[in-house]
Length: 67
Picture 1: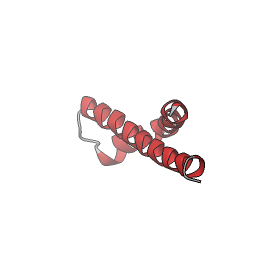
Picture 2: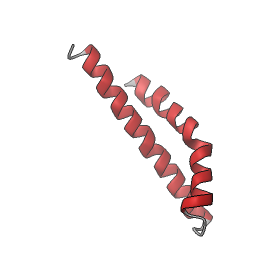
Picture 3: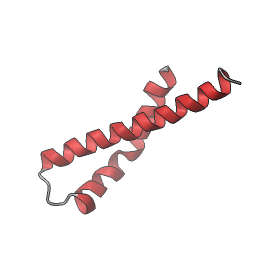
Picture 4: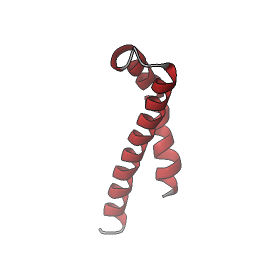
């Protein structure tokens, strides 16, 4: 759990941070207010990080616990 919560999720957030903000501001929501873009950006990053953590935990438990 430590690895997923701290390393995997933070790594995904750091990797997608600049790219996703540019995508939101230029393509997906150029007419949205800045506060709405920030909300979408934070929540989208966290959702991607949780999804990556979910797959990480599944793969780890599959290899270690249920092998």
